Length: 69
Image (tube, rainbow, N blue to C red; front, side, top):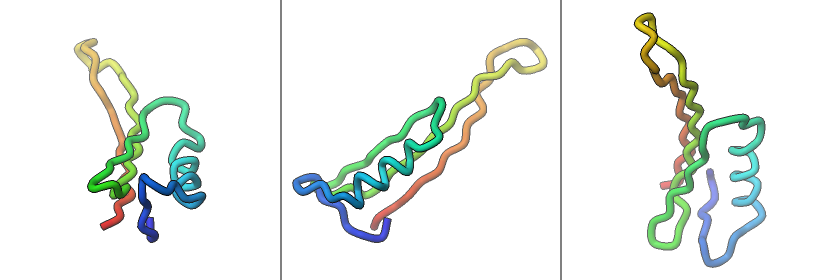
């Protein structure tokens, strides 16, 4: 995110950032962090639950963060 995004005026470029984060997601989450009316971070998480060798559930996850400071 190179541009400052406000929550009071949602720009087309912010919508595109969110759409890009959602694109090709089949499971997981997209989190949007807001501070002082500004979008400061969009985090993408993909979590896959698998069984470990002892047959106990284990979470494998990947996280991608886009930060605007």
